[in-house]
Image (cartoon, rainbow, N blue to C red):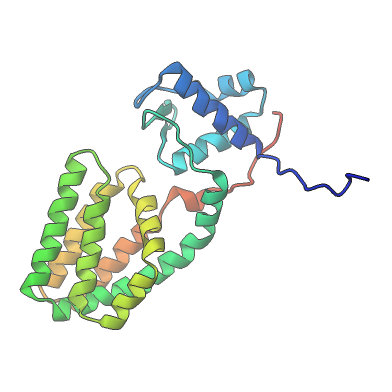
Length: 240
């Protein structure tokens, strides 16, 4: 019986194979955070692939916050391992992220406006506590993810709108993805903390317009992530 119609075998993108080799190189070489990877030209020569494929692999590592590519200074590990998320998962998140960010801007801008009109002393205390948590996390070298989550949850609660809170709960998982994506950008945790403080100041002062504007600026900053600049299919050729 002919096997011409046997199931197709998926072929990994070339840069995905480069990613796997880099992961093994870091593990077998005992490299850790702060160590420098070989130059792209050297990696391409040693792996027998184009520099474009190596560059695309490095971009994927940047997108995931695993390396830092310093202009003119090489590529350095941010963590002790290169536990790379499957590329197909990155592609899917990249596809849905713009819609999530649009929803966040629409919903959270209105929530901040309402919070400035309706907040109670207890609401303010909850937002203050969340910012203190985020600040402590950042000081400990973390991204401030839990403090960020608590702050946005406190703003939502301060709006005292059951329907809007339900909308936020309905996209909670996607919001979590966008939060992690944003806060692993270089210098982003500190910037987000500062923006949170501006939002809180406007809410405390009962200035709805200013609170909404501050939240809109913040969510627009959240939208500026390396993932959205990445083209999964760009420059994946086998040779230079």
